[in-house]
Length: 233
Image 1 (cartoon, rainbow, N blue to C red):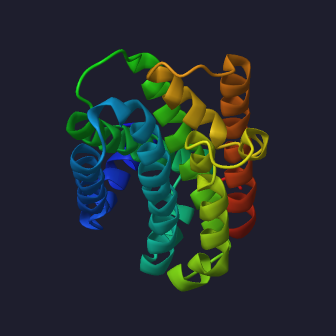
Image 2 (cartoon, rainbow, N blue to C red; image 1 turned 180 degrees about the vertical axis):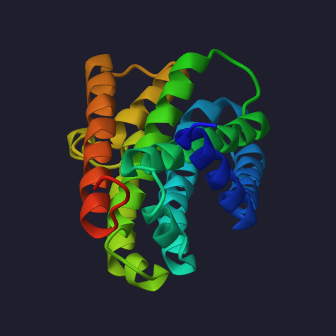
């Protein structure tokens, strides 16, 4: 078994044991039920992208950071430092497992809220993948310099997560659209809106989504290497 496959296996076990999957599924079900019984069926195309940004994006951000902090506190990272696992493999494993779970959360919300109509599944999945990858890397990168959940949450994670989620106001036509477009998370939100037929700037949505993922990866690698470090760092 390759190092990366072993890391994936370990991450799935740790995430399941830490109840991250149970928490994520519970949040997805609650969002789905709220969307189904509070909002009109014809508003699903408006509500789902917002729910994905706030709920799926928010949990992915927190899960990435939480796993790193948990492994710090339990000494897992100390053990990994004497293993051949590299920082890149460690981070890719977290991104792969948590982004896959973000898709599972998204599917649960979709099944509960969506009641038919035009949709582009490929574009929707692309938006969710960008959201999952970027939020995982940002969460891990931000948490790398902290040793406790409390220190991470206040004020760093709180400020960053609030800023990243603000583009939902643009989806509701609150405030000037150019202001929310400055925040990169507006790009995957736009992709998810386009999946339900919204008219968007494709060059902005695709270009900024790619840039968001690239910058998030570089940010996480730089912070992880500086504050944590693994084999070869």
